[in-house]
Image 1 (tube, rainbow, N blue to C red):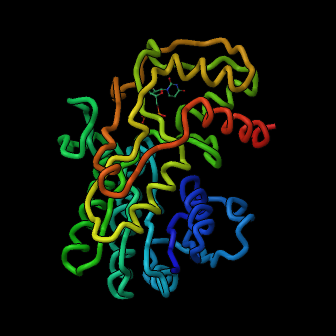
Image 2 (image 1 turned 180 degrees about the horizontal axis):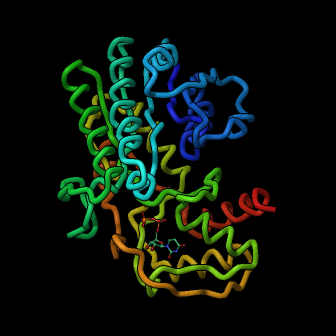
Length: 308
Ligand code: UDP
């Protein structure tokens, strides 16, 4: 079966491409290389690679041709980026998603699996977070991901294909590069490997649910292959750690003893986050398998090669 991965040259996309190929399917990638890297796909010469933007209907139609399943990962990612450029955020995340859905329905795609975000929930009022937690996003990004999710589910109902939205918690792992809008694990990895102090915002006792990208990739494929499954599902590890504990685990994985600089809490940060992942378990057998210590050891080894 051929499967399209939009954003397939990116961090999560390239990990997904690997497991789809390992499962014996054919892959098309659509990526404009704005935040993806061609070298993420160097190991996969069989991939049909379309360089293009999800806002461009022709590029999208060309990429969808022949695909039974579409994984829509291409996005402008992050709260900060969306606050700086809200119009661009929605052009890519809302209009781009519509372009993908229009192409998918015209091509008679069987299933769309959309990459959503825990950012759709906004302020967290109950823990663990179930799928029916209120959705009140606090950023243009959270709002655009929610719109994308709702569009996918509406198109699925309107045109009779299956649609799944996966709400990712804090995803980390191989191919996650440091950038200006980066997440905490690449930031700490870089600081540790450069011998710099790690910068903790607040007292470090805030918690996050970190899920390894391999588990996220597997969740995508399982959701695609599960017949008759549509809807929105949380994808996390179902466990949480404090940022102080994360520092300790990463330091051990890096054999480093970093200084820790505590700064003011980051405005707008939620204090605690934890996914209830039982719905994804029941619907398509999602069971995260990579423990945080193993995942961080692998990530630090990869980062060391990347950074030095
Ligand atoms: N964080 C930190 N130092 C940094 C970057 C992030 O202490 O240099 C903390 C941040 O305050 C938050 C957690 O790490 O509590 C996760 O941050 P990230 O931006 O990765 O994800 P999100 O806050 O969106 O869950």
